[in-house]
Length: 578
Ligand code: ATP
Ligand code: MG
Image (cartoon, rainbow, N blue to C red; front, side, top):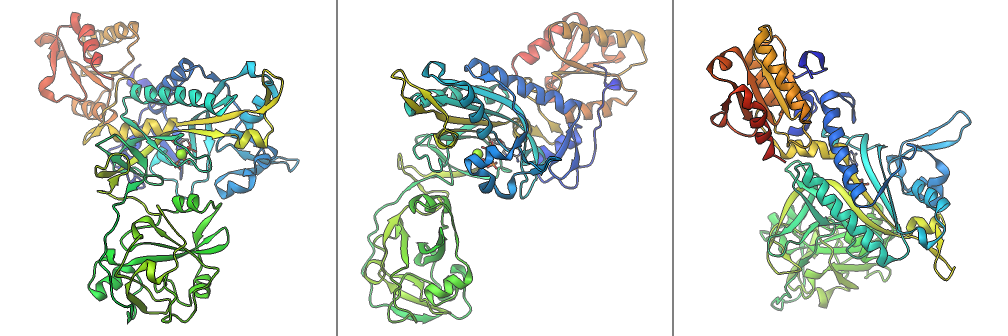
């Protein structure tokens, strides 16, 4: 391909709305162009990389035994109503009507549609197990589309769905996808870690997200170097040592005027945040529950939801807090003793984090505005119904598996494998007949890869101050020939002959034949990040050949090779790359 014939636009300036390097670089290198918030046009260079990622995904899905299908993006509302998600997807799902006023959704995912299809074809255990996949555009009305392709409104997803005869059989389908995902990311040159993720209502260990570590990541992940445990912060657990608090004296109410947050009260009293019990009133499926955690910790609402077996948990509104505790948020606590304006409300369930079991001498809100109580012995003075794991783990917390300290890192979720159970097959009555001819519900798994997000994650993980450093497997072109004297026929001939020789070996190559200064060509080649750059110029040829250099190497590694050996040298340079 000739540069002068391709639609490439490189920019010197970062786009104003880009916060992270990969987003800036994708725009500057001319891989994509913004249309509106969360919407992009993939330009030829971006499209080539996207296609390469898709090809890898397709090959690994096929190899794992999954079969490709493609389903409509426009999905009738009836499907979503059958599963109950027409309501529960809320404003995140794009909805529209046809001219006859029928409701549709733009597919944010496709569990409903695939279940409906498979149900209509599969009737016997002999047709199972079955895994189908598609690579299709998805639409989500994200609250904050940002970071370019990382969180866009329209994105390319590979979604696969497995159907099995039993929960046990579904484990094998799950593992096949899990292993295929490892290969996909490896082949894309990405270091992606499988981390345990929240399983929602299914329980068990059968949900893993694949994360690429990056400062820009939106997810927190707890890692243990000791045993390799990795879990999303939504799910991560820690080991808590039993406490051995010294007995404390009688409770004492203290005035803490104007101090609302733990930080303010701890400053006011001159004691560390950990001496406090942080108490929050939640609305749990509409019923108020008080949740107590150590003062220097945050509540993990995902865990809270599971512990309480609730559908929805959210902080209670101001009025509710006032009604159940008699105080404003910031002054509430689990002790409803004589100090409070109210007796302990029988109806108020109070639960506390496991670390608080046996806590003595702590400070709690007094359920009286601007007052706290010190010398609280939780078991003696409060009515805690249950102790459970209710907090978000943090750096240095102890791994529940091996006892070593964990570290918290940031990650970009590029894929997600999930054992679904029968949530959708129940709703759609997707049944098969077993060998006794009895009807059974199929067991499902679902597996997503953000294809466009993965492409950008490669850049986020592999770039330097000059631009992108593509792995050879997903680079728009593997080789860029910088032709320095395009108007000199003999020099140009060397470049185009080399191009033809490389293409004959299935190495894709672009020849920068623009009438530009060498500096401009080198800058652009570095910005776009072609894995291997070959300089063909009159001066070099007079000195004995062409210059071959890998993008990732510095100038000192540049090799001058005779024209006759150039193809072999390029092949070798590419050989060591992913
Ligand atoms: P996230 O937590 O990042 O919002 P999700 O859990 O909603 O993702 P899934 O429903 O599991 O995502 O979708 C499968 C994959 O699709 C994700 O692993 C991610 O790589 C990708 N993805 C999800 N939302 C977006 C988006 N708005 N833009 C680009 N890729 C996305
Ligand atoms: Mg997910």
